[in-house]
Length: 255
Image 1 (cartoon, rainbow, N blue to C red):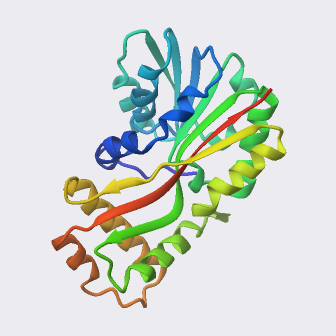
Image 2 (image 1 turned 90 degrees about the vertical axis):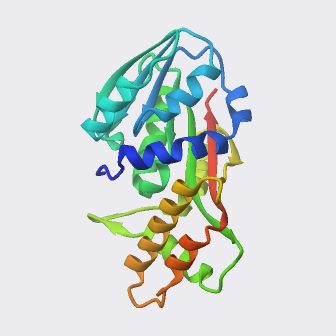
């Protein structure tokens, strides 16, 4: 996997992420939780959201492939009773030995960037270590905009195709990831609970909504260069719609 996220984008989306995540899954986490490993930690937003909801003391191992993001994350998770360390590396290389002493593995907006084989390996690692997983904000392929436009469906279909593209010989799961991961965890003997965790965008979040629209339409154009999208993005940016962008949160527990 390669890093592809900026601190600017991750900072823009952090409030929407926090508002979308399913808080009732936190109440279901087996206790105690003292050591948490956050895969693909980005700027550390998962720790800033989750740590205040858990008992202290806590130790977070923030893991990411991007050294700049990892440095940012370890510098910006400052919470009472919480210590942090950075772990530079690819989440696909995680082993059961890495999880010794870990109570919880988390990630956010990550599963859709993985392949079937990579999710299978990640689930097998968690099953071998018998570690709980809380995986949030996996893209679900459900987008609705108000007011609607005739080209919305074309953009949504092309975007989903882009999410399932082949990158370096790896076919990404994209919006198929939440269901695939849930099935993989169940096959491995886990108890799985999922919840919808849609983003709510619109004129009240103008910067995030505009940046999401640019990325959404840009990916669609990249996937279908022949699609007639002239004027679509410009119209949407001029009159920001209210948007629901579907995600899924997943909790998997063993034992």
